[in-house]
Amino acid sequence: MDFDLTDEQRMLSDSVRRLVSDAYDDFEHRKTYRAEPRGWSDANWQKFAEMGLLGLPFAEEDGGFGGGPLETMIVLENFGRGLVVEPYLATVVLGGGLLRRAGSAAQREALIPQVAEGSLTLAFAHQERQARHDLFDVATTAKRDGAGYVLNGAKGVVLHGDSAGRLIVSARTAGNRRDRDGISLFLLDPTTPGVTRRGYATQDGLRAAEVVLENVVVPADALLGPEGGALPLIEHVVDEAQAAICAEALGAMEVLRDLTVDYLKQRTQFGQAIGNFQALQHRAADMLVATEQARSMAMYAAMMVQDQDPAARHVALSAAKALVAKLADQLGKEAVQLHGGIAVTDEYKAGHYFKRLSMLGGLFGDVDHHLRVVVAAGGLPEAS
Image 1: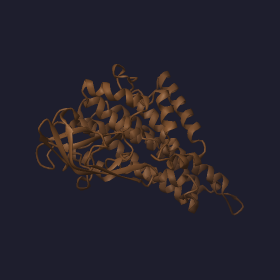
Image 2 (image 1 turned 90 degrees about the vertical axis):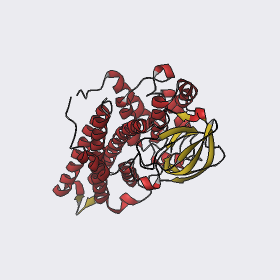
Image 3 (image 1 turned 120 degrees about the vertical axis):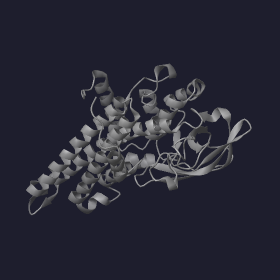
Image 4 (image 1 turned 180 degrees about the horizontal axis):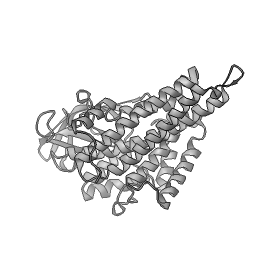
């Protein structure tokens, strides 16, 4: 595998890093963005659109820029460095991924330009309370009713679902709750009668929502992709999201490591900087090793998410997510211990990075879940 970035990718990285640095140079700015009505800054979102970030992964014929997983990794790593609160993962990676892979020509033509220009945000309403991390466990139903469907069910932890302009909802059109077949996707206007959204702040300062659907009537053209055959699409897009999560975690780990090393150089005890003590130097070195391991796995995830074999791709992404989440947890705990009590105060940003890393580690499956996936498959796929 070639891990070298092209000149264009390096330029993208430099541009996104400058943009994030300008918007989040003062940590107080992040608190200001979180206090806005939707929990994020519309001004920042428009800057992302102007730079082309919101249209990055979409095909050029759909109004995008034709970027791939490596470009997404570059963007998310820099977003992780700034603890960006805007709904990029929810709108562009998850919602946008489903739209570009499952949407009809008419749906893509109508919605992708709106996403790319920043006027429309998306949210993927899929997770259900009983499902844990099994993507095929869907109890929400969609029953045929004349020319449309009637949706009933409840979805939880819908990332940025409280402010999204469109929801992409998974519902069962056939089969039993844990059948792999029979799952469909629907584009839903959240103002449709029968839709209830309860928004809340997650532990990392971002937003999510609980969504309840009670006899929600949608037309037939709300169907996104094939009826009853949405699970492979969902699994593919969630794998892409896992690669993006690994990249964002890497960016957050880099900053948290640097914050900790700087603190060790500044904090004095017994008349000298505590960074002079060899035991603490060893722990700082372990944080560096963890970051570099996470970097390798984030690159591996970005490469393997392009694998044409769904089974090999899924196992590889589970392996990457498991290791990055484990490394992020270890590094976060080391940072808190080495900082002492200041690390968990709301005024100091180290604790906010640890919270975000903890949240990323649990999204779409925790370490134990992904290790079970790898073990069940008999280990990683052989390199082709």
